[in-house]
Image (cartoon, rainbow, N blue to C red; front, top):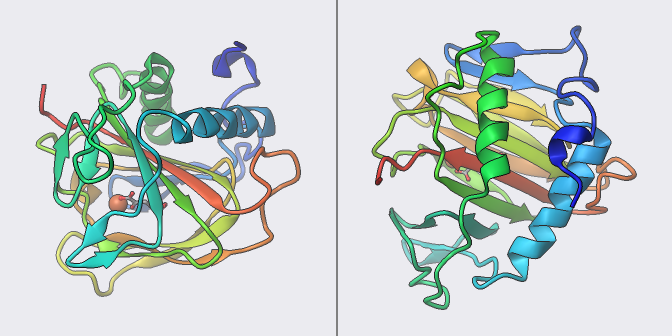
Length: 228
Ligand SMILES: O=C(O)CCC(=O)C(=O)O
Ligand SMILES: [Fe+2]
């Protein structure tokens, strides 16, 4: 299999004029961080994960199914904890967290912060991979089921969405609304690690030709669970 790291240089598409943009303290948006070939490669991995031991499934939050379907790597997330086995889906153990994703996460932190050592100690061990159809969204929430406060690294492939990134205190203003498009990187850590965020709506029909996902959106968030 071709390596993701041979498919062009990260940041080559967005270029120096577009990123990184620090949208809140410790939160960066890097448009076009993955090349089209890299997006395509990630979309192909998603197909493999989706046909793996645990199918993408809608988690139930307070009795309501979420509109996104999620497949996890390394550790399985369900409201509101991590387990090795997907006990709320089919009981199977999730696929391991891939080594390439760890490397990608480290590079993402370097790219976002501009600090060559920002990724040295980063050891993400879980990824939540969400699939959004045209109608899917995600309410404002904090990623707070991890014991580690290491940054969250988010990558998107397919259709664009409107993403709302707020503050750690409340799901209300101040927040910024931005578009996350195919290939975009978003990183949040530090003072923004526990900021509320969500996907307000999808922008159907915006996936670039050749990204590997003609409709819908994949979002990967990698995290350190701190569970050891
Ligand atoms: O889809 C996104 O961009 C965000 C996903 C997210 O916030 C999550 O999975 O916790
Ligand atoms: Fe989140």
